[in-house]
Length: 427
Image 1: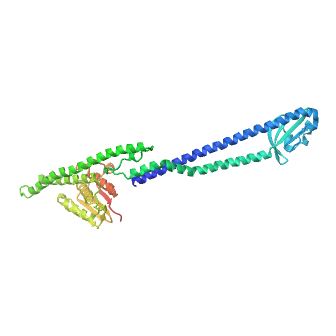
Image 2: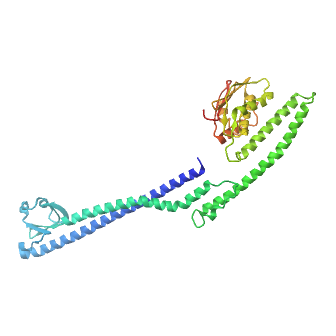
Image 3: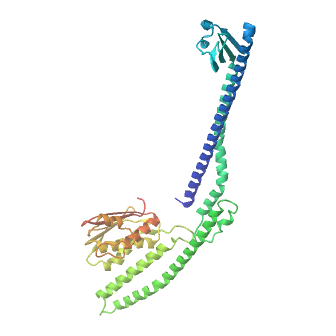
């Protein structure tokens, strides 16, 4: 996955979190406001109705002893009943069981809703009912309006949150896009100039400082690679030239010391070439196309180059199918050379190399590997056994395989040999 796609995914996730947080905040606030308004309205209505009923009941208590039945209120909204204690059967059924002194109770009878209060007047039971049917209808309507308003606000909060998040995160997304296009050592324009005045300006300044340090590191690495390419290859070329001259002398040609020197010089040259290759960027053609090579040709060349070092061991090649891979020749030279050298160092009498259907296999019948050795085989500097080298062979193979996306698999058992498979191309 490219860095810019990861950054866009991060930006989208952040936008979702901002939108969700804003929507949740609006939902909580609107719900609390609706509950508070409903509670305030309920309390005001209760206090108002209790005040009306208490006032009317006080007037009834004051006027009934003087005026009798004429003191009973006579209106469309207020009904009053004054009965003897043993005559409550004449009252509407919901009023019969009320206590003698009741203030503010909602009851329904005669298909209407009333606010009811009771008292005792001259030994009689007095009931005063205030019709609140219309008020209750308005209360239900008010509740529906509040719920609808809260739902509408919540529904608007999501698109509004998305819009606000996009505007708020636009500088961050722009910074992410610019970061995805950065390349060390290209001398790009500082990010801080583009994001002055934004909160992400601090992040841009930090990235500028980081890129300056990284550019310095890249420049030093390029200088080292160029210097090493010249300073190390030149003495090695002199050594190899001297070896070729000595090999023409019959007195020392084929002697063990000269053979060891020749072998060490070749290994050093290959190791330097491998390290320099991994230290620099992947070479490409002039038009930007990916470099390709024939893997079967490289395998054959490497085997031929290593035949003088095989000694008593033999190499069998059961299959060597034509195979083109998207990688430079040096990458395959590093891989095949290190796998073959590892098999020579730890293998037995026979080494089998196969290239079929894009799968390169190097197997030996040597000492094999323990579980711990298999687990650490590709670690840098890990060495095992009396014939161990520098611990870089399989590490370099893994580095090259990771660079080009080749899948590598190692299988080994003690005393049964080792088998390494490298998937260079799809079948």
